[in-house]
Image (cartoon, rainbow, N blue to C red; front, side):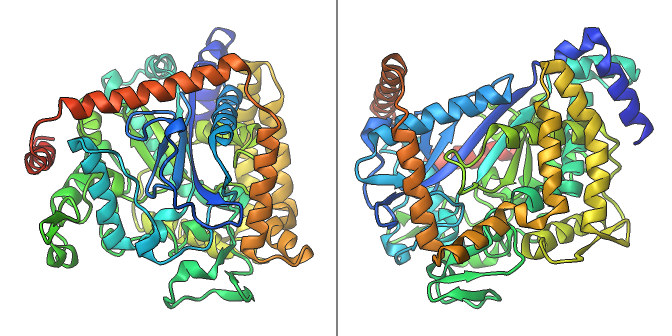
Length: 525
């Protein structure tokens, strides 16, 4: 363990400081396709009983009208975050008629792009903006990629912890800069070690062949309707999923916040020739917001993002530039098709340990090719993570995945002990113990279990996914919310509908000016 890591652990282990860790915040965003009982993509509109997707901050949509997104409030205990996610699932299933939530990350059988409905957010300028942004995603990357589902895990340490460490380390940075500096350090460490998350939690080794759209690929045939890679952990995070040639030159290596902001700003302002050829309008209708490398910051595909809660009318990079990093969003977590919520408390406990380790441990700058090495390690595990004897690269030297994983688990142990002391539990150490079993036995990984289950039951990917989706739907519907909880969600949904109507009623400006004002705002960052 590094000296800085040991000092920070010692400071936080003091009895008066342990309590501070209990004020860390944990939030989850879970994406999930709505499908019919046969596993076909739902063609219905977003159910009005779930509220307005534009203004309901618990239940909304992501890309497609059928791609639900569940958003929990940030909770101080990740077990409470999981409990809130379950409540959202239970309410949603109570309002779905002859539909269920698709269990895996990779999508169901997909019809032609023309039959995949994009999410609709009403007639306001904000609603149109969100719709046309998705139109731009469709023409840039195709609709299939936008139907992939994942889990985003939001995490922050309380400001009191950063104040404590700032004082203990006698930092000469102002507190905001110190906090941002260390969140960026967390982000660098996450990039160094996120391959471990792909090995432990990757759960998408196979896909319905309709997803490939007759494009060239290197996948193997599992059965007539299923393609896979024998040792893959997460096709979702491979070059089949969230990757972009246009963004290949956009490589913010998180060596400082200003560089990260500058990279995103340049991408939002720099034209990209293939997109410029398409233009922003066709036959008088908007098809994309602009012709730049990315339309808005959210289009940047990454495994992690430093973030700050935005104020009304504020852009994400504007918030970061003004007030620094507030939390991080880990974006590479697959939906586990064996779990009703796609994630459970033990997995969340492990993520808490992993992210705390990334925050407290030394984090040298990514230099001398380490940035590309991080990407290579990540993609190697994504595609071949269960291959016997798999080697990764560390400091220009080969190292076996299992050897490196064992070293990381040893380094994670003090953070698990620290969190268990703070929360008066053994769940964090137990989470480490359980996850380490996957290092010792690769067949325990979710990706291996998916393929084993499909083989044992002679199922295609779609047959497996339909069975799991129905199983989860039944489990959730057999556990209805209490009347007061159900009423709370219903009232929240109705308020969101009224809120959208109010926005539309007072929205009088023309859309072109709305887009121009939004794009102009980035120049002031």
